[in-house]
Image (tube, helix red, strand yellow):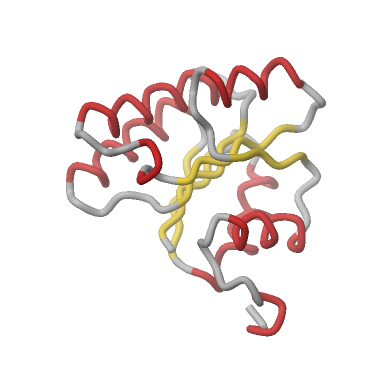
Length: 140
């Protein structure tokens, strides 16, 4: 699995990277603008991300705008929505209107609330077939 972790807080990037590390490679960026730039570069090089874990609230470009731009990159390349990257929004607040917007306008795949726990994230990854369904037996 290839993952892009997008969060302006270093602590959150470190927690997410430690959880993801046994299951594949990852890149870390600090805002939505960097995320879009790197996503586009990797996509154009034929090495798209399987997973994007993106904070909603960030400086420079927030997660909502970055999500829409990433989906536009996929759409313009002819990628069917069901075949695009799994994009999970990561949020620290109970922002149901923000999440509804992410699903309806940005076509996000899922979301996860902070604080992030290993089990909570791995269950979500298994639901999206990014890791084995029996991940707890794998020792990852």
